[in-house]
Length: 282
Length: 324
Image (cartoon, rainbow over all chains, first blue to last red; front, side):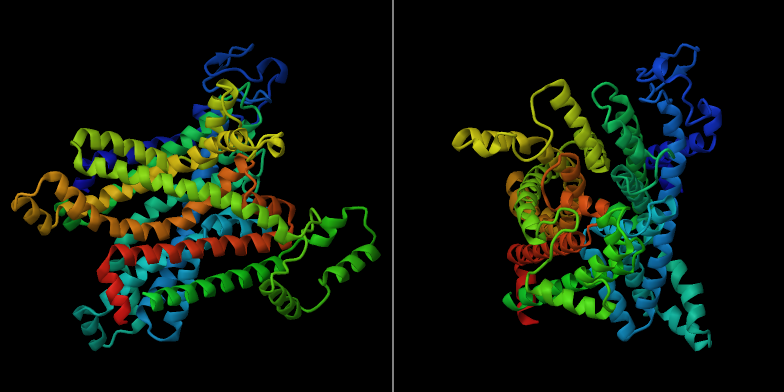
């Protein structure tokens, strides 16, 4: 923890994420409150950032073509984008942990099969898989979570498999077996907690990736559906008004980049902090 | 070497076969009827039944799968439901466009990415930090958004470059120099988008790989025996750091292709990715299946090539696979 606090990357990453999450949770307090509000379309549409409308309300990031406040939609969109990203990664980790643990601890054809499936999954462009799955069912936030989970577990499974496999050969596992502890209990109590370190790093990096993919799907119209604001959907809606209102597309993109950078830096810093040996060598 | 490549090719074929099977069953088990979509809301039940029979949707799933697999292997990929054109022609036009965009971007991102990563690993800490901030940011930028921003600056504000397609409206009439100029102008923005993002990821990786090698004892020995810093950097450090980079080449192929899908969509680049998105949006099943399979094949081919490259750079790996 001390190592982390001394690491500027970790401080920046955590700082950005805390601010964004806080703003998303306190959305009604930091915005105009109604993400769909269209007070008077003709007089309030396409207001540039920091403009004040006829009723005296300030629009820090301007308004879109329906006169909706971009800042308000951005903050409410953070709820969707972050929520979907986090849930998708948790789902992916749950699958990856199970597959990796089984493949790492039980030898035989099951391991070979699971590893083969994992490798096939890793060899494919994730976006193609995601598009394929998203094409099949009606788009919704829940579907995006499932799709990102189902396409995101392979790297976690690989990590956990390797870790469990090397841990299972260690003496403390042998002594646990000699004490008559069941295999499942050894896996749960002794192996998995020790194998979690690389998973934490993968999770931090994975959240950034999931948020980006969610935005991509929503941008294509295959993710969260309008009028519910999500960052990808906001970028897509700004695409049509790029000429007269570039801020509508620019603002959610910048927010997206900030959050993904924060996740990446936090993941990098975690990796260095959890791998003291690697840190010393550099 | 050859045996190892053959083994990789066999694994690759298995991957493609897995994808083809997965795609088929997924799309057939999905809710939503492509026939109803094709005929529209005014179709009568009789028309739907007839069309279903004509497309073979009324036969058992296993029979449909066997028939489809047989036709797929023979290269008969059917006709697109949405456009009525043969799928093979549709994708045949798209593959060169994708190879042009993704291939050039791969080349450029590696050249520039390795250069930036090398500078970072050898430069003073302040420059290293500045470049790190830049590469992390580039790596985090979604391709479709960067594409839109570039369009805004260079097309709408600068009026300098075209934003859509692979050639202008008069593209078919041009020959020679003007033809090439037209093509290049259309290529600039999508290529820049994809390459900028690629540089971010590759430079980050190269920097890490170089850093790892710089700390090794043999580098200290090379310095100790009085070699010039440049000789150490180029012959001892770079050669060893290039091995993980070449492995990354194989691993980054799926990611680059993924990025290409969005960039093709934004720039209306007539490649496989754009065809796939359009087919997905229209539930055009034959095109979705074929485009997915073609993407898998392109990625697998890229992986096999990257494996060969790794063996070429690192004699240890080459010899080990010969013994095995």
